[in-house]
Image (cartoon, rainbow, N blue to C red; front, side, top):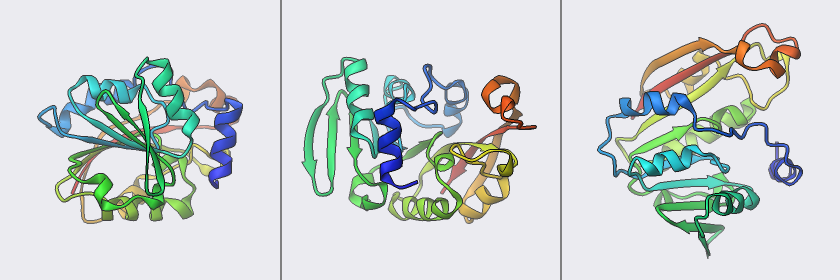
Length: 216
């Protein structure tokens, strides 16, 4: 799960985690964050997700971080955004059209880069990381975010011994431990195994998808 792992996945086009449509859970539950519409949104490990476009269409400026430059270049090209690149410290940044997307190591981020962030959307970051990295990821992000943030978090929960990640299983108890001290509300919880034939073919017996509203 080092940087080379993800670079190789993008280079080979092994990006089954990329969805070809906007996540309906985002569309359904985003209003529960009760935002005004113009607040900047943070999307960790954003890839080239179409969810970025949807968030921008709601009026938000969108900031994200992604390790693979190929993902951000694809995002710009596929949607004719003509994002411009510049360097800043340890990051290359693609920006324009209401986007500011940092290319580099998530753990190199500093608080100034998340200044003003009011909302976070995590559909593919927490579940992309193995257990030993998840606590570090959450602690780092919580340390950087300004006070008063709200997050829409989507997780998967299944018997981890039934298949290797990613995506990894993140049980409810772990979410509550990682975000101890925050307000945590489960907005949705469904077994979605029937919608994922590949997982079912691997012998999995359940696949629970949860949507959380987490507030600082």
